[in-house]
Length: 224
Length: 81
Image (cartoon, rainbow over all chains, first blue to last red; front, side, top):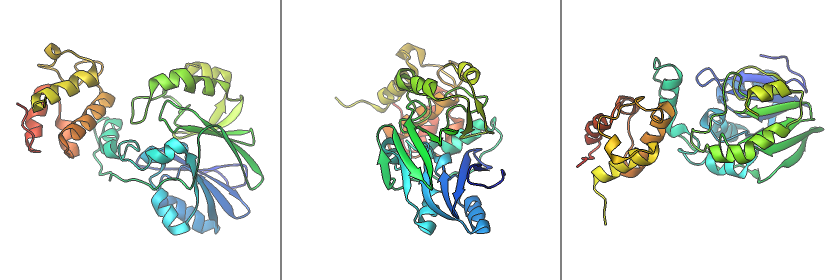
């Protein structure tokens, strides 16, 4: 776990799915990006006496929203997401929870079968359709829709210095467009151009695995 | 005209994997490029939607061929004929 300050995100990785949740703190409040595991997040918040005042979602897949329902129940925190993400998380097919047991079995190399319940989430409290800029505790964020991995996928840039890339630029993996909501044509037509246009170098925090510096070379290796 | 369960079953494979009907007999999981783990998950979701069933994960994992799938579906009251 990384040190906590207002510029250094804390990464909480879900043991079951490997997804990353990022916590940004400011003035005893936190912004939660992709709430993957309620218990782990709650433990951190309680230890620091932090109060979440915003939840942001990079996309609608269940491994990135598995802690959302409980977070909303306990903290009544507003959720910000793309409209497509908001729509998708209300459907077990779009949010992938319907097939997650099978996915995790394949992901484990056929060694582990774990029960993963199907679930849905209520729509986000605030949605956006195109590029969207907002301010949170003096930090400026740019949310940039990147269709391809899912229809509701978004990259989030903080203060032009940090990139939360969701399931794009996942180290060691190519873009996956064959999971629920994926669209290879949309990725080729739109998503690629958006990713290519992202500023570099930029400290990048992906939805899985460790953070890294995104450079032109990394983009080239990613097929951009 | 109403499709039979066999016609629905065949159509799912043909649509999901872009195959012709004559390519279906003997078709096995990982026997073609399209029927990999990702393709398998897509096929199983189509299966559930088409026959309005909810399959248990062990059955999804045991669904290893065109013919084996017909046996598995019987468990859910779906007769492919």
